[in-house]
Length: 195
Ligand SMILES: CC(C)(COP(=O)(O)OP(=O)(O)OC[C@H]1O[C@@H](n2cnc3c(N)ncnc32)[C@H](O)[C@@H]1OP(=O)(O)O)[C@@H](O)C(=O)NCCC(=O)NCCS
Image 1 (spheres, rainbow, N blue to C red):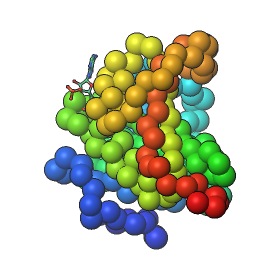
Image 2: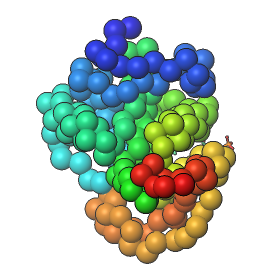
Image 3: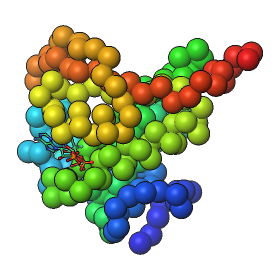
Image 4: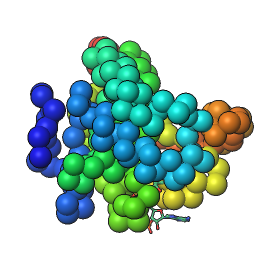
């Protein structure tokens, strides 16, 4: 399968047989548009409301460009979960803040036809390892109160719930309460700190 120019592969990845994880690349818009069309109903309850353009190659090309630009600034790290040429999931480190915080927000989803086989848990474990390598100290994640599957993914990958935030995010057209989770990655000094 052709890979985007400059994309890394990860020999230590631990995804189920037949799946791969790799960085988002410039040529991924068609496969992403197809994935979002396939998963429109599956993702709708957990996502912001999407413009129609989001489900098109053009819309995805804009989104990919924006994400790669942010990645170039060190603000996000986006990966795709692949099954052959199909995008069947995503995992992202979002809202990266350095300095004394060294923190990122974790986001992920898995294609409706590929759930229930440990993919999200494997992708989250992968992102946790990479975040540690990148020198981040803490990952946070928020789930809707009734998103039991996502809560299960987080608890089995070492995250702990530390709170409930009322009206936390504007999801599927309204402000919704979330469970807040975090995982502390290490006890080393912050990258810019004197030990
Ligand atoms: C949540 C999601 C990422 C899980 O993906 P997945 O690949 O199926 O996850 P895994 O297979 O690694 O683990 C899912 C766990 O949830 C459990 N689970 C699934 N549906 C469940 C439900 N309705 N109630 C309780 N547990 C449930 C599974 O049994 C499994 O736990 P187990 O292995 O201990 O039995 C996927 O369903 C998804 O993309 N949902 C829509 C988008 C979303 O919610 N993203 C996260 C936003 S915070």
